[in-house]
Image (cartoon, rainbow, N blue to C red; front, side):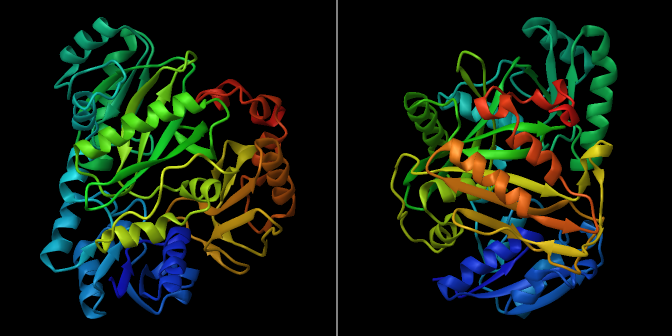
Length: 447
């Protein structure tokens, strides 16, 4: 069994992992940049080591510093959380070389699923439906033009090493292709040191629905149902829920089975998420696999009454999977509370939190590293908290979420709380009549 875990991350996910470890009797080591010295994950870990200045490349992305911290503290495992080193196959290999257990999948599985073009081919070969598009990387504009002419516009250009909407461009007509190809390739090079792009047909009116899978090192893989993630802005999720309001039991079974098949094809273990686009006729198409724990994992946990981080650590320790396949028991909704000003195009709003009152009551969960007096730095993503409401039905979960949002008081910075309150009262959201472009089509202030 793992005895000491170094958490190679920050913010709410680092604190979430520390809590799971403490409940399992596992010692914890926090790493932090100079600007994160006062974060709660640093305060609540058994040990904490500063690994560099604020810029990620000089701290949370600096592999020698992370490995050194693990060696100095005699940590026998590293949990990467999400982002940063979570899907870096080279980091996994370096951990293995130093006798440190990486709490996540194998380097080989990350390689196969981390490159979006290779992932599509892998899933296609496993019998999973994929979005029509290029069979691999398009080497230049001329090849891109040929592919687009074959599948028809509109299309999406996507970075093979991408994520978070970077290196991604919508192309609605042939006249826009050349400029979009250049911009997307340059952005992919800047963010991922890899300019390669692939092309997908744009699925009109699509919903973003993902399947949570988890496997062990003994070949067992199950799925833990779906999450609806269609409320997005610039490809960034804002609201997630489990189960989806439109997925039938039959579709859940079908999507779950092909997801398990896809995960088994790369000998996957640990939790992972297979993301799909679902069209108006409920046809589904593979987009990508995230080979890590997701930001939105709490809605799966709450809908089933499980602890995914605990299971992830047990699987990494070599334990057989304890979870069983089951239907959702509750409905759970998560709102991402970001330090952004929705009244001014969601511009970032870092700064000191003067008042921080967290809502409570039955069925309410708040995952956050923030507190009154804490300063949200401008160096990282804007997530302040994840607010999760869970109830027997979706209608009750929405009502509970609105009440909790009304109780959530954050002063000193602007947050997305007003946006989420409007969404909980929005007739389209309440009816489930949404898609990934919903926020592009409406003015949230008029909701």
